Length: 539
Image (cartoon, rainbow, N blue to C red):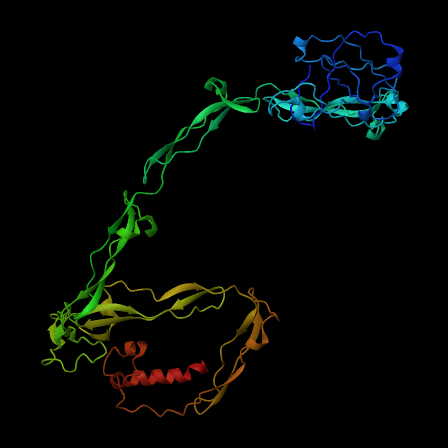
């Protein structure tokens, strides 16, 4: 039985197995080439198609339709049997469809959307001609499954696909795929692989927000034991992850240090003594524990002011003075005390002492540090250069005894400082490393005592071991001859040139003869010292 809706683009083909009845020779020689594989008949209508609907063409397969007895009128509206045409195995298999004449919708009387019987099925297009298959290729080669692709997962159930290669039957070896192009390639099948479950693992979530906005707080995260199977992640019992170290679910956190502004100092003095000025103070950012932080670590909108204007009142041109100094300029005896006296004005560029009210107060006064006591002390001069340019040598300095009375200093006899420890006047010294250098003898006697003369000496280059050498720099070689006693001749001493004090040698030793007072009271000693100084080069 067949039912079909209105869709001429779809063809249906049904075959009903029936016993093959005997047919007459006329039926065999008079086939129905115009009918398709489906034949629809009514109760009183024999299966005889109209010749106007026949499709001419060679017949290789004959369709045999047995004769049927009439169907009772009570069953005329039921379905009709459809008998497929038999096909002989010895024939090529090509048959021509016999299509019954179309039935118009006006004759069918079927309303749209209902099933109808005795529908004419559109003829199927003729099948394409069979391909000429090379029997040798299909017999000598075939598609052989040689393995699978790589599994999509190492565990937890993956998948792979079968792999086929063209193979020679005789050699059982893979050949080029072109050899099997006449054979249909087997469909690729997808199979499950690595179905064992993956090892369990700890799955951690994102950290929660810190529990405190500043200072030390805590944050949490979710830690679950999971396992992958069939490409799906499943939460499992934590015992399956007990061999693994469980990540921390809680940890300490610090978003920022709890801090505040601290006023370090009070307001400074106003920048002016009168009028409008400004003053400052020190403000810093510290933590709640008292540690110094950066200014950016404290809220900027709550920072106290670090400077502001100050009003010292209207400026008055008058004298201001400070307290007197607490010390006198002299340790003993009369001295001076000082204080600062200024005239304040609002204009810093204007002279402060002009147009000031009143007379300027004094800024100095006399003071007395008490009676002075005579003090005796040793005074030492600076060290002379080392006597040796290289190697060991000595240094000397002058040591004198001086008395001090107030601000007056006087050189006195060394015996007055005898009760005090005398500083050393001689010490050893070391020069640079000795190289070959020039040595010279003392100058000989001057050829004249005054009005110019000549002195000579010997000069040699010696090493540190005092052996002759030629390594001394020639440009540093000392002179072997020089002039001497160029001063005019000094007349004999006058009988009035005498020493008036017994300590005149000390005056000479202290080099005080340059002063007229000491030169007069120690005339003889200073004159002889001057004569010796001029005659010194002749020694």
